Image (cartoon, rainbow, N blue to C red; front, side, top):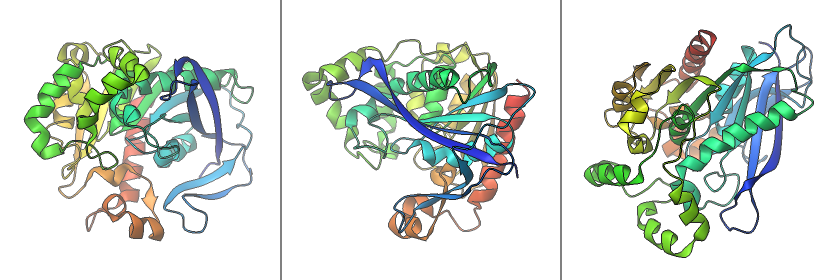
Length: 339
């Protein structure tokens, strides 16, 4: 398997405030890329060193970028709600091994990399600009300058990350539309994710008390499209995709591949993935086995993760998370290489 380089960094978006309103929005990112042959590396696990929770892959930290005749295509990666950039590292590693540069962001307030904020869990549209800025930032770094093919940029995301990549393709959000839909289906979905089970009850107070939240809420319906994105992979798209207007989805002509498990309880495929596929004009949907759940698109879990968080670390009997990751990466490469 080709060497996979790995870098981490952080910069600030001076154009948007953090959720406290006392400074700029932080953009913490990870990059996976083809590394020079022979670069020293090893296995990377995620979590406390004494008891790591997940296995990400084999990487060569800060290794030099492998020389190539042509610039590398780029994939922007977006994690699920409450996760982090490393949480989609299984895909970053596999894409880098196939000759892509993959860039992921830990989305401010919606990431385990920092204290959770309800604002970050509610203002989904703030995620798309994070990825755009991360792409621009990487292109300015000496290590990657002139080595990124900005004519071949793609995106992939899991759960709320799938919402994010659809926004990059031009999907527009209507929060009233989502609230109306959610009122009809809340019995299947609850009032919020596992990190904020009362999330929907917090909206009115935030609108009253937080100027930063109000300003973001007013931007919900803005256009976050980036015309550099040529195709997208949506893994288990979250219920938030039901906040997209059907007209904006139907207008997307760039190809989208959607993958979802048939036993996804957090984002039921009939409400989310299948609806998205039916509404788009250029998409295809792969439904995985009858017992495949939502969290199969997280990194493979280690014993400490299995003991601490079995609900997201343990798959149903017979479900092979590693094999599903390989299949998803293969489909991503097929989609991106054709576009």
